Image (cartoon, rainbow, N blue to C red; front, top):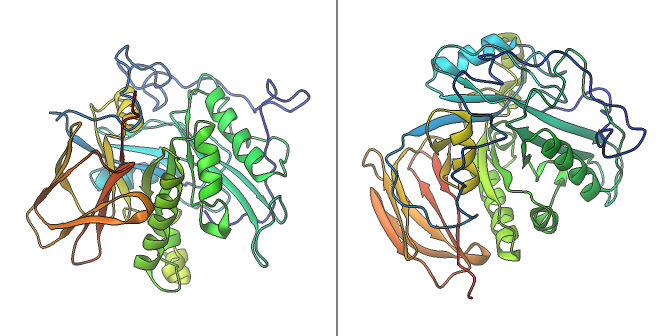
Length: 384
């Protein structure tokens, strides 16, 4: 997600803003091309069984955990060099079940390798030197969101970039991108909110009140570059998440690669720790291996973010959250509540925590090597 040499204009679709240029066109993706997987229900029209309300308790499930990546760039982004097919093959070889190609202002759709689902996506990108509120001295205004489950029949897929007018106000710019994604039947992720101080807890809360459901908690490429190390970057990200949740935002958190560098060895050597490589941060979603069910599980919070820790099971009843780690190991399970307060710390491989007294409870599993898993918050039910 490195900065482009030119500022990319961003805006609403023509239907939302009179006189605005529409997206470039091409033919809709054919069945089996990633945008419309054979036998899958449209990701925009999930099966009739509605997802549970945000934060509702989930019953134990026999469904498998699917490993997925939701932030990846190819040579169709200005700052990527690897062709899309090779990027998908990279993730398929590492056991991923689904991948979203999220090129800057471009929707990339193609045939995925056998066994891998392509989740159509795009990183909507506005970069500028000024906006309102202004960034700190020496920083820029970076408004980046990912649109996931883009319906390729609603957005035109071609070689040209998505072009739309610049929006000066930060919240309005984010809202414009969210509206564009909604018009494509997609869901929005607020990307790397701490990068260039793009969004604080007030902004996350405000956008949550407008329908934002996901934020990028972990960005492997950026976290690696933190001057005090990856752990400090993760602590800072968790603090922002907890501050937003404490304010009342109801947002789930993703871990992503934001990968740009794969088989371009020269770039990796030149950039060192600043290279955006792959398979460092991902999500595990409990769902059937089809787009509609993955979408359902994400919206229900039935997933966790990870940088290496694998969980065997997570159960959430009205009264209790239970976590079981896959392979028994020396690790700790931390239950976190409002204000980022640690409510309990228990040893692996399993732990439970009683729900009800806190506005929300989430959990983080920490392994000795620094790898972690972040569980989604369970929100207290509102009193009748």
